[in-house]
Image (cartoon, rainbow, N blue to C red; front, top):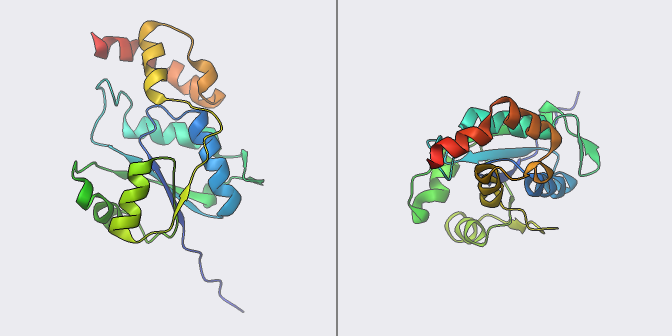
Length: 179
């Protein structure tokens, strides 16, 4: 019997405040090229603040709800296709990649739509960075602002994530945090 050598996972990291359709599109691109992905949740030490109103656990639930059982990259995503791992922010760009490498299992390619994240992984980790093509601009900041103002935000977020956000009454939380 031949033992399969596991593939080195790819990395996709973000804050996901909240997880939106742009993130889902990015993961569609990642899964089109990768069989196994580490999804890193950044800034897990922050919650209930204007820029980071959701907890790490809530963001974990959003990601799972949005991708498990969905067709991404031409295949149905199962729980065995990814891991979701937390990462505190150390607020020190020159050390950040080493920090991520120390928290996560070894990973190969890094997928990102962020120029700064791309630069950091290339310069400080020697990783192959694969840029994400943004099909449309969706901003989590703008989604949070819409929630704060009581405007429609649901069309920017996957339906299962909308359900969670409403269950948590997160729009009201965001208004409360803003004062």
